[in-house]
Image (cartoon, rainbow, N blue to C red; front, side, top):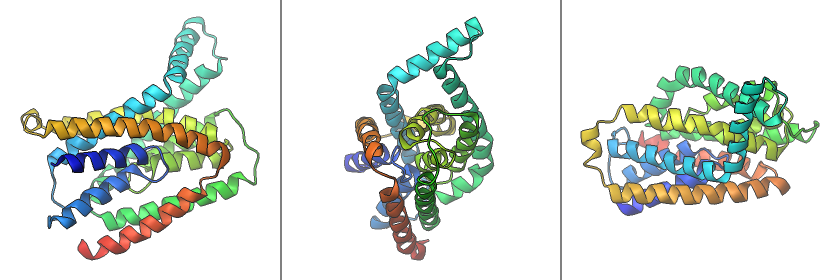
Length: 280
């Protein structure tokens, strides 16, 4: 693995994890484009790339933990005192419960789709189609949201449907942030509230599904042979770009709609499908 490849993957992960454009799709495209340019088979499994993907998710986990550190501490304190005093009226306590509920609902959906998700990693044309579908969902959510009243607090309906949407986003091409924010808009949240809940909801899933579970299948003896300079550099790049992405994306949502990202996903998805369909 070259340093340039790791840095490029780190930038792709950092900027696409939180933007509604599917980080998994862009990592698949980047990896398969690299293989295509170097004459490698698209279905060739490179364990070092799998481990790099885990470390890049660690980078974006660090970025979301730092950015939302005050929110996370408030939620943890509210959960502790709520359970201790049996006072469940605090808004942060409720938000913490909704994050737990959303995560619980995400897990079975992700497990059911795990087989298909594993196959799509080696089918970039199919990933392109799912990315295009993400684009249409984003456009619909904006259209729907503008015609209905919006609220600034997460409710049980938001948590249930957003958790299911996050599970569906285990399929490469379905943007996790895109589907969860779109679901928030469709279920009555405003853009910034939907995005905040989406990012907080991502924390348990990044830790579990994107890091711990894949790590179980990698041998320690193999890890010791990896290019650690490239991996560490990619992780740092992922963390920095992820933090900047969250910071400016939240500001973007205060003034602008998701339509731009919807059109981007549609165009990028169709382009990826056309580019890779003859190479599968």
